[in-house]
Image (cartoon, rainbow, N blue to C red; front, side, top):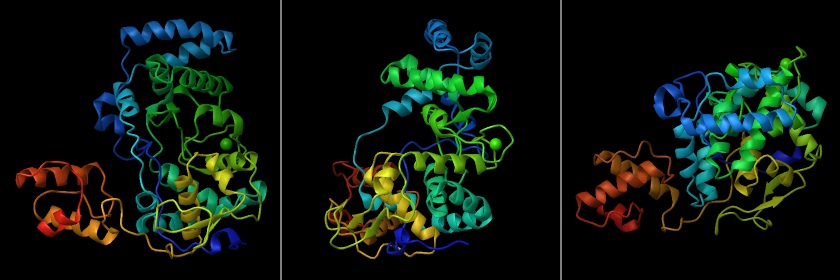
Length: 373
Ligand SMILES: [Ca+2]
């Protein structure tokens, strides 16, 4: 039943990576256990804000008993604000993004997850016209195939951000939507958890997207995107993409040296198709859409990207960056792996090495540094 489609055929590539909004872990070591700053606490300021908000929630049509039950045990989450403030706006290269969202191990995990849920994914494809591997890739990028769904209570996360005010109006809207979900009976307050930014379940729906697109594919009467069974979440993602205008049989993008999109100067080019902008409705980023499409291709059996990436803005190729990471680690400056992505840990290792040599601790990689090691 499963057939490859044109949209995947040409991309042979490497991994893609996903978002910066790293959701908490759901089953394994709980984020909340790992970080006390993620435990909700009813501070005076937050509690006062909630009291004022309750009236607005009532006006929006939420029942008083639903509101009371929803806020029981919830609170302000300092770690949510810390994460919101830490969203550095540095632009990750497409090469780094792909290395993070679609490394080989994730491709393998994706193929295994696809095999386990093949019949469900195919049934979803039949219903919504969105290819099974695209849905699987979104699952992989959003929650690493359900292993990182997030365990921060959504009412606490969204009320913390609404109270904080930096993006207050947006998060108050999400909070009202979350209450509406509770009022519908799809989930209990205790089970309604997600990322620090309020993205919930296997496919990381924010509450308003849930209200717009979530479906009960299992037929038990609940649109359950939080349970271990990913069925409703995967179907909801497909419903969302269909609603955003997915064209069955059309391409998202193909690798093409003369393409219209070249995310990194000197790197791979792509010719985008009609479904490219549809994937971007999930997350408005070219890298995201290319990442999802590429992971889908790889899950469907495709290989790594064929076009090479050139040197990065520091003049280093991925081989050199990996070499740098290995040498730093061997010299006692742990980079926590050698994926070739120079992230915070690699930068800290570089800075420590620079300090040890009496150099300015810039944390920037360079060919000179590599030679020195
Ligand atoms: Ca269901």
